[in-house]
Amino acid sequence: MAILTEDECRAIMKKALSYSKADECEINLSGSDSANIRYARNAVSTSGAISSTSMAISSAFGKKLGIVTLNDYTDEAISSAVKRSEELAKLAPENPEYMPFLGPQTYSAPTKTFVSETAALTPAQRTSMVEQSLNVSKENKLTAAGFLQNSSGFSALMNCKGLFAYNTSTDINFSATLRTADSQGSGYVTKDYNDVSKLDTLALTKIAAKKSAGSTNAKALEPGKYTVILEPAAGIVLLEQLYGSLDARSADEGRSFLSKPGGKTRLGEKMVDERINIYSDPSHPELPTSVWSGDGQPQVKRSWIEKGVVKNLNYSRFWAQKKGVQPIPYPSGIIMDGGTQSLEELIKGTEKGILVTRLWYIRPVDPQTLLFTGLTRDGTFYIENGQIKFPIKNFRFNESPVIMLNNLDALGKTERTVSGESGQSALIPPMRIRDFTFSSLSDAI
View (cartoon, rainbow, N blue to C red):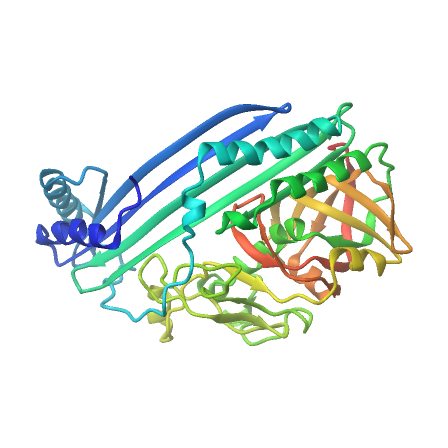
């Protein structure tokens, strides 16, 4: 019931605008249906479903803005909310960075962000998918903990200047951690897709089971600089720190790794290995996203780093106006070009190195150099002469994605993955990196 059609959204939002007496008024209407199964110790612990909608009414008088949210769409409730938002706007101080709402925009054709089979997933289907995962764990005498969730949603935007935008989307997310009975071995997998037909919980759990069984009796290596192979689920949590920091204002104000003395930035400079191409593209079939941003700006295919050179920075509408440039919205999906090798081929081509399944607990150390720290876990292995020789104890690392991408040795095939830190999806290849810095050992499994 939470997924309102485009016509239903239009009717509700037009009604809200009809009550407005403000200089400007904008309506955001969104909602979602989601359902999940959580399991631990090889048994389902919770199963739930949530259905909700929410409407935000933004009223402005000059540069004074008031916002009210509601989920009751009767005439009386909407009228009251509009009136309340106007009262709040009149009481609010002026926002010196207030930007007038956008007029009508031109968007490219909607992408396939919504897959009906994902939205229609039944409790029985979710149960079957989790059952396959649990069976792998039990058959291998391991202990599994995991989470499976599918969701569908809509978002719509309408304002008094004639702007209207509408989008629907679906997602299915799966993660599982399998441990040995003595808790000395652990394996992890995570994936998410728009299309449920692409998710194979059986195959994924087998990967986690193999890593779990193979990571017992881990040996300790001395901390230091090693060649590493970062699987996509590990690489994304560092890369998202890089592409999430491509903000023009923080660079201009000297708060970023892209800042230079005198208020200048590194826009246009080569910052990383020339094999690095990072871009966003709402129409990419493996990572389709909305063709409009949250404030109604069009989202288009855009290069952020091309052949190692920083090509674009994110400009908010306020900052773009201040700098006299065109605004560039933050991307809704990131894609990094890869190579032709599989993960197995990357391992075969490694003389000595470390395979990293997962990096977690990422924390900033120095924003000026984009230095971060965190830990490996859930399957870390030593590679020698192209083969995995033995499991190793986990490390704490201190590394910058900028330094990391300058020490690039090889790229594998790009694949869709999801960040275990932020929950954001991206297309990321496995990467072989030279001189990755491990600073100390960790007793975590």
